[in-house]
Image (tube, rainbow, N blue to C red; front, side, top):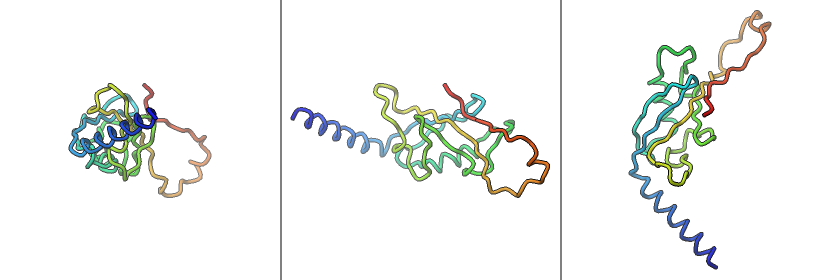
Length: 138
């Protein structure tokens, strides 16, 4: 019986946090493949979507990088080990980390160019295929 009451209190606490999150400002920093950062960017956790963050990453991308996204569809954002979905808000993507500061989030950026390119010529097909990972493991 005490377990049920504890679960009820936990659910109520989470609902209260979600209501508070409606006006919560968070700071988001984007970690690039070479260890450099974009940001921090301040945003409303409940109102800002992952798609809006991707647009911001593309707009703020450093010009001196060898790899750069052309559109927001070329960008994948990873937070807490999960690839974030475009239609989710920042508040929905946040994982509870206990006593860590709740207003600072670091997201990893992976650039994956879209596959809707023209067909490569025959010379390109003879080259060995290589995969390039652009995420940093901390």
